[in-house]
Length: 612
Image (cartoon, rainbow, N blue to C red):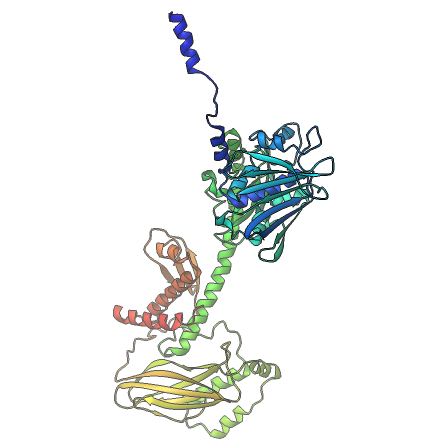
């Protein structure tokens, strides 16, 4: 009795798995595909597996409902012993595809193997009709309906048979009626990229509903192709790479493919690969591993088995080299970005110095880096100097200098300026001691900020406050302050034909001026400083001025720089403010903290207006 019980217990504790409800299992399989676009791609892949050379996808409307049709010229559904398409085998061998047996026998270029591709029509529409030709010259069709276990095979009413197969899904589900031809084209171009290239199939889309036609072309990657990274050998076969080095873009990604069909749009969707170099945003392209095992239902995931382990181990040999290539690209980008930032900051500072008091911001020569001055500029500098130093200079001398001819090529340069667009007064604000004078210049400009020279009329007036100007017309004017402190607004009105622009300068008249400005005389004539980076994470300083080399050293390890560098505009503004800080500190030596802050606000205000 004891022995019998022991045997019975063993029988009860062992056995084989069985499906309790076959229809429920089929329903789960049919609804496991969560992407209608992926389902359409599987329909097209069935055509490619049947060696079709032409596939046409038709989106149209019939009886008020939208339908989707896939037509190919492939080998069609295999025939049974009677010469009729063996639809019965297709419908009764779910999860037992004939393609799997063909692949085991060595046939290549076949993707399907699970026998469940047609069932994904449940995620696209309500009814599927699949038709193919028989050996008798007639066409036959099989019809299946969503949520129904049955199928129907009937002869198709047509005068002639057709080559290949024709698959129709009708009507399309309400939630995907906006799935137009353009979206299908973009998806298939990436999803079936290498399958299209290797098979040579032509895929066309006729969107009759929106009256447009498309051709599916394999997606082309951009950037510099990394020819040194093409394949890696493993014990299960080769892993193929097609990688491109791009400028940084968060949208850049490397897709994972199996035998030419995309599995994941980005390999970083796998936790193991969510790291450098794959998540740096510098790589585009694809990785193709034919031996990977896919999740059968969605075919949008990887089984983490022994094959996946071999796949992951193979990457150690190339990742370090890719990191080196990307690091070089980063350095090249930083050099270009630094040059552009420096140009932008220097340009903005030069514009600001036209508006700010020249006597207070003369720590460096703002003309440095512009190159040699033209004859006209030199002549105007001499005239301005003579006007400043000797108001009683003979008018005949000035007139004679004004009539000196310019070289032809330089005159042509000034004629290239466009019509009048705006005007500024230099300086746009300043402090003048009571009873003293200050020279001002009006600068007319075209839309490109070039100086306009011809057919201009400039009129000056004191809009508000007390004071006097030596004349009311001309490019230059001398302001004389009264003996009483106050605020003066000087206005210049520029006319060129019917175009008129105005500019203002705010003059603060005071009874005392700080004499600390430029006391040491250091830095004059050096030009606007350049800048460089020193990485010092954890240290509090943001920037320093290297007086010997005329460089502003920026701590790119500071948390503020790291935050600012995430956006180009924010980084540019941050570096500009560091320039302003250093220039104020070294231009106003000995000032108290409050005065330095006031100067800092003043300089950043006028600089950031021109920062772009």
